Image (tube, rainbow, N blue to C red; front, top):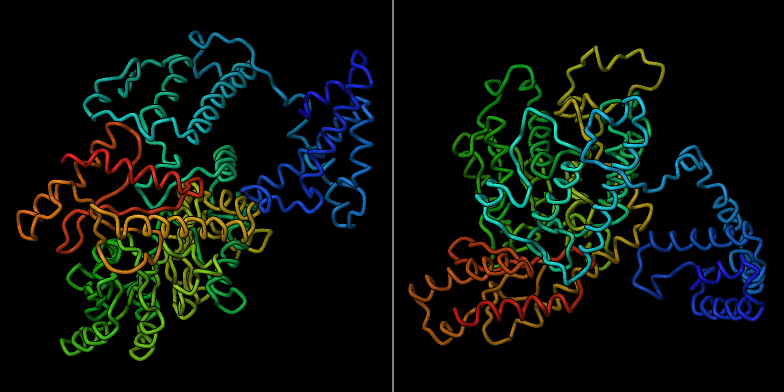
Length: 619
C-alpha cells in the first residue's frame, strides 16, 4: 500500500483525492504503531533486527518522497512527529545518520545490478572474474545464485514445504535427474553448476524448518545468514590482526561480553572461537594439564604422573575423546554416576577422587555438564566446585548446549555456580540459533591459552609489527588457519540485543513445557523420567495401541525398542517432520524432542504429536 501511495504521490495523473486517501491510510497505519518508540516486539513477534530494518525502511520511504517531490507523505510524517517531532538528540542523530548510512562505496549506482537474460550453458568458471570482461557474467551468475538461496529461505519457513525429500545413499550416488555427485576432468557449464547448487539444497535437510526438531542446532536466522555470506566474501583468516583487524576486535569484545555473562569479574580472562564444542572441550583438558604440569608441553606425557579426568556418565563423548587424543587414555576418564534426571551425584565424584588417589593416580580435571545432550540435565555446579576446590582440581563446565541460558534472567539459575569454573564451553550455534558453526572456549586465567599453545612461528607472528601484537590470536590456538566464526554471532547480537536472545530462549523453553504438559498424562505416552524438563529436551516413549496394557517384560521392551526407529523412518520418508531418538543406559529407544528454533510454535508441537500418533498407531 505504501508503494502504491508512493507511485501516486510521484505522478500527476492521479488527482488530489487519491493522494489524500493514500495519506489518510498511511496516517491510520502509523497510528497503530508507536513508531517513534521502535519497540515493535511489543506489537508483533519481531526480532530487534526487524525493528531496525523497519526503522530504516521508513527513513528510506521518507527519502523517496523527497526524491519524487511528493509532499503528502512528508507532511503526514511531520504531523505525526514521525522520525522528527519530539525526537531526542540521539534519535535525530540516528535519523541523520540513516540518510548517509548506506552512502558508501559499496552502494553506489554502479553496484546496483539488474537481472539480464544470460545463457549460462555456454559460460564456464573461466569466464568469471578475474577474466577479462568477466564482470557481467559474474554478476549475473551471483544474482541467479541469490535467487536460488532466497527461494530456499522463503520455502524453509513455509510449513507446506517438506522438511526433507529423502533418498537412500545409493540413489543419490547413482544420480538424480541430472544431479551427479561424480567429479570429472572437464569443466561443466555454469548452467550445470547452478543446477547443482539448487539440487544440493533440494536433496538436503531443511534444518531451519519450524518442524525440524532432530538436532540441538536448528533454525535459520536471517541476520546470521547475512553474516555468514559476508564472512565468506571476505575470505580471511583469524590468526592475526594484520589480515583480520575488524574480526579480531569483534572476537575479543564478544568473548569479553560472554565472560561477563558467566560472572567473571570485569569479563577478565581469555578465550577463542573453535570448530565446535568437542574441540572447545579438548582445549579445556589441554589447558588444565598445562596449568598443573607445564613440562608436558616440551617433554610429553612421560613428564607427568598418571592423570585422571572425571565426567558424567551422561556427558558428551568429546571428554572421553579428548582423553584418547591427548594421551591420557580412555581408561583414565572416570565416569560419574547420575540421578534419575541425569545429574551428577557429587558424593560419587568425591568417592572416586579418593579412590583414584589411593590407587596412585593424580586427579586433574572435572567436567560438569550444563545441559546434557539427551536429558538436558544440569549438573550441580556449586557442589562440584566445592569438591574441586577441596582437592585442587580444574573445573570445566561444558555449556555447549545449555550456555545460552545465561542470556535468560528466568533460566540462568540452572547454571548457578558457573562463575566458579576455570573454563567454559559455550556454543551459540545451538540454543542461540547462530548458524553453524560457532563455539567458544572461555578461560578464567588470562594468558594461559598462549602459554599452552604458543610456538612463536616467526614467519607469521613477528614481534616487531607496527601494531600491538597481543591482538594476534593465532599462536594461542591449536590451529593455524582459523575460520571467521565471530561475525555472524556479533551481527546477530547487534541486531537482536541481549534481550532478543533472552526472548528466543524463553520461548523455546516455554514450548518444551507446552509439549510436556500435552503428553505427560496423554494416553499412549510415557515419560522417560519424572518431573518437568530442565532444558528444552523432552524425553518420552510413544506406545502404539498393541503395546498398551501389555505387562512390562522382555517382550514389551523389545517391541517398544523398535517403535521409535520405525516412526522416525516413516517421518523421513514422508518428509513431514524430524525428531531424534536413542537409548540411554538400560532404557530402550525413546524420542528426544529438543527445541532451539524460535520459528516453532505451539501448532508445530501439536502437529508433531498428531504425526507420531498417525504414523505409530497401528504398529
